[in-house]
Length: 131
Image (cartoon, rainbow, N blue to C red; front, side, top):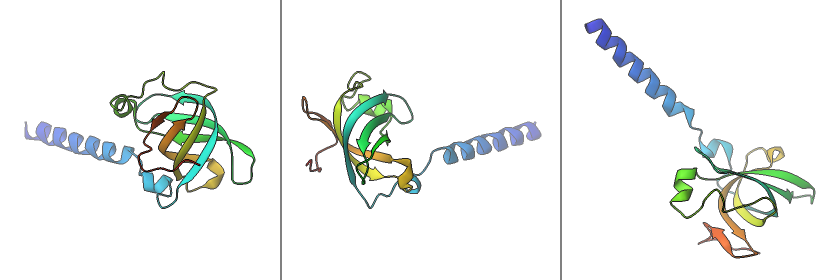
C-alpha cells in the first residue's frame, strides 16, 4: 500500500513538473523592452488556446513585405474581452503594436494592441499611439 501511494505521489509530482515547464516565457521569445508597429493585411486568424495567432502581410524595417506571426491571448481570455472567432477576417487592414521577437528574421510579434481602421474595432489600445 505504501509503495502504491509513493508511486502515485511521484507520478503527480512528475506530471506537475512537466506542466510547469510546458508553457514558454514571453521574455525568452520577445523583447519586452521594445515596441514595434506593423500595418498590413490580415491573412489568417487562429482563434484558439493556449494562444490565438494573427498572421499579417506587412512591410519589415526595409520595406519588404513579410508574413508576420502575431501571438495574442488565448481564446478564453479574448472571449471575455469581446473578441470572437468572427472578429477578424482575411483581407482586414490592421495596425498592430507589440513586442518584437528576439530573432528579427522570424517576423514575430507579441500583440499589445490591434486596430482595424475601417470600422474602429480595436483591442488593448488604451495606452497606444497609432500613427
